[in-house]
Amino acid sequence: MVQLKCPECGKKFSTPTAKCPHCGSQINKDGKVMVISLVKNLFDFPYLYRNPSIEIRQKGFKHVADVKYNEKFELAINKECELIFKCNFVDLPFSTCEVKPGDVVYVTYDNGLNCLRTIKIHNKEYNIPVVDKTNKHKVNIKLLLAIIGVFILLALYTAVLQMLESYQLEKYRQAKMQETPTLYEIQDVPTIEMTDLPQAFEYDDIRQQFEIWKNTQDRFFYEVSLIPGKASLPEYQGIMGQTIFRDANKALDEFNDEDEKLERLLRYHGFTDEAEYLKHDKEDLNKWYFQMRRKVKYGK
Image (cartoon, rainbow, N blue to C red):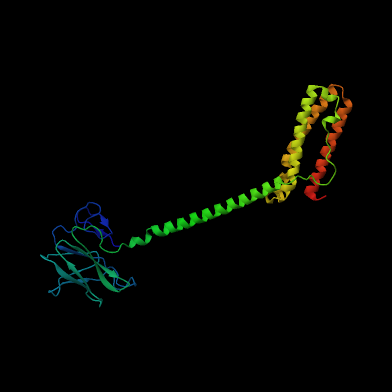
């Protein structure tokens, strides 16, 4: 848009207004009608009809004045009247405007309609009384809320699906865990009972250590019993299948530690045969476990 110059501060501004946006001085002080032309080019061709003169007529008078691009003309009137604006050498449709003392009229050219247009600002109005073209850049609140609502619904839908999937997986896992444990058909699980060490249990320290040893063995067997159920779960397939034996391996390490403690106690109290029997029992249990693990991983 053209740059208008304030008669008071000399600063330029581009938005048509009745007051200078910099110093606040009123453009038309004397209560006259001020006409300012913003017509620079009449057509799309920049070198044709540049800076045309706009003829100003007052109804009842033949001719009042001419005004060129960014020029100003003051017209003294004492009552409301009608002004007519027409290009003085191009046959364009003219524009009319009802004015009163103190008004400011900006003459523009509508390229789409190929005619002159006027923007009238009353002496007490400081905004352009036309459609604000910046509306196209403003955010449509309703559309924005609708888009946000769609995203929220999609997020809720995804969350519900994940919850249902997790619930079904947990339900399936619990059902598998509640099934009767089976330890694969390889060999009988090697283990010993208290009856295998009748004389050794006369000593309190051996009896207490045997109870600890038995608890770790039972925990190991429990972890092993869960392996068939874990092997059928989706999260234990593929690369993650390496973790299927994690808890059983940890339980086996604890069992071996307690077994060594019990074996040392038996030897300390002179039960060498029972200690050797316990040692071979541990070796058989470890061998059985690694055979079972190889069968689960490789099917052989």
